[in-house]
Image (cartoon, rainbow, N blue to C red):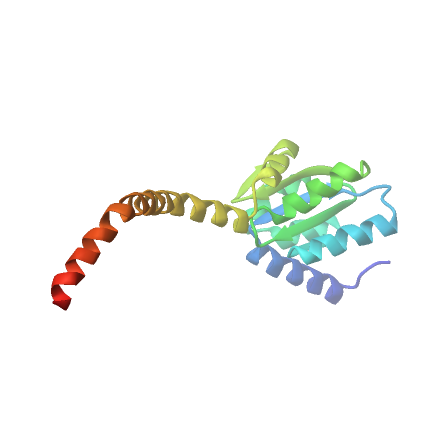
Length: 177
């Protein structure tokens, strides 16, 4: 089904706005994937904040022209699904995880930070923990010295606690007299 000019302009403007907000673009060839598998992939992507789109490559090239994803314009050939995400690793993670279980989805490349990524680059990006996990790890590292210090002080207080109790009782006795 062919799109008329106004429909093409609408698609280009939608994808341009997606590209403007996104940090990452991942492209994968989807030839041979069943409708049920594609629906499962789309649902998984939607739940993780990734927008998947099947676009005509000429429209995709026009939409990303002038954006950070323009560097992969020459790779936009064949039947591709485009994954855009605001989270730096979400699109790569969704597509790479699905490709592990479905050999018909073939990662072709992507872009992050204005640089083109090859297949290995997308897989490396997908292996990075999510933002929430990284923040939790950072918080754990920051709390570690403080909690160790607190444990040492608590152990010292407990150790000295037996010797200080009689001293405290002696201090209270003269005040009462």
